[in-house]
Image 1 (cartoon, rainbow over the protein chains, first blue to last red):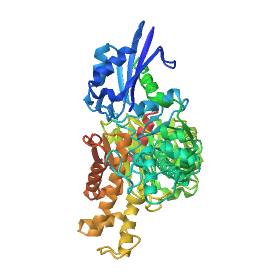
Image 2 (tube, rainbow over the protein chains, first blue to last red):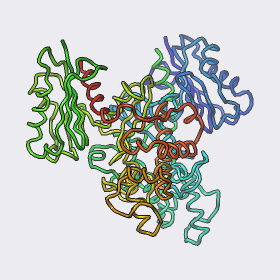
Image 3 (spheres, helix red, strand yellow):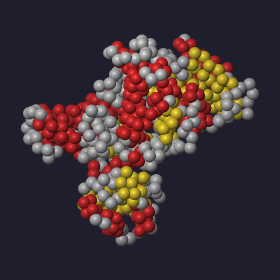
Image 4 (tube, rainbow over the protein chains, first blue to last red):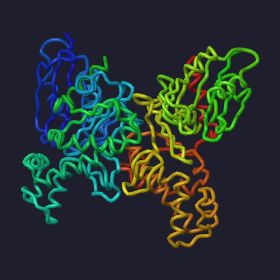
Length: 310
Length: 310
């Protein structure tokens, strides 16, 4: 009997799972804190893969979803923000040689797009854009049934698009990127700044405030918190209009923690994207929907990638 | 002997040419003013195609490059700005039935990208972005050796990307698009506005001024005219950084009238794109170069499209 192993190196947890086949539930899955990769990350990864190896049967292929700059053609991690030592790491070669099994490596947000397209909210579509709106904003693009990768696999950095030239500095160092305006921390920072500037709110102006707390306050009718989601949705929708002009997708899938706020963020996004598209042709049959795979998107994407090897 | 016929419906001229094969010079070519399409445009187009039909041998395929919103899958022109009557026009069907010859239709800027990739400045590359910076800003994207089209073929509207939320209104009705800031008329309008506001220049503040005249004045050392290209190049480069993050190309090909200004526009573009990319990985091996096919890009793209049918 054949199996596939999928690995997702998330910001919080490193997860591995063994699937008897594509589209089925995992036979075994294990997770360790990503933080534990601070020492001997490669050994820990290999040991996690071993821990889900099936007792009987073979493993046909291994797929790995890694955050950061990853070259999927060469199976190389250029740099990964969560795992300090992973710079120019030939990860595919290491895993492949250890397990004598075909292995592929991809960017986690790109693979989440692949997962949502194949098994989640994008099933049946040929042209999809996926965003995860969370601590950062990442994503992926499926164009004509293929993952958009670019020359070195660095494409679809959908959060690092300049939205407001006078906006806040992004984590990447550039100014006014979408991630710096509409991610969870960006929403929370805006609320804190407004409170510091004297705006009333049921929230205290605590810098440790989260977008989830802002969403809870908005649901209770806090005007500032509602305005924070209106603002983030407005800018997100305005940028999404640009993406429609560039990619002309039939479906936009939105995942990540911020989308758990539901209509608080979806309503202003829809209004803004409709307002900012240059022709109804880009919008009229477009589906804008929530991701279905939740935290499993990267893992399912890595599984899809592994399956593509056989 | 087999032939291909290519047609380019440009803003000024409707051109048709008959090629004995792909990669060769045309056997016959004809052009008529696009303005003459104001009455009976389909009949005039068919008659132009007939006028380049070879006396001997067969025509294997016909390719048509049309400005505006074109669905290449269905061969339908949704709307074309230069030809008022062409709304929801099944152009492929009309041409194919008239000449009993396989026919394909595409957006002219997309096909110019295809032409530059196959026979111009993008040869040998697999991931290309092409811009034509002219009266408007259009373009096309080649990703992994394929033209990016999207669900209805409306993708790669590279000029209709929001650059400055407080910027001027674009021809499409939206505010602050790249086309409204860095196209030829946008450069000229900025100069006129600066002169009206009291800035000194050797140019008179005539509203009929062109980007070409601004370039000539800049070459003579006119500070305002130099600043106009610095500004356009800055914004273009800043937007190009976004495109690198999205598409990760290995080559960027710039064509259209504004690029005839040479280093006046290329220098600030290069400086700005380097400054605004979030990692050197997007920029280090990138080629930014001038288009090679000039006004023939659309025609050569239509030829490439025709050839893809056989």
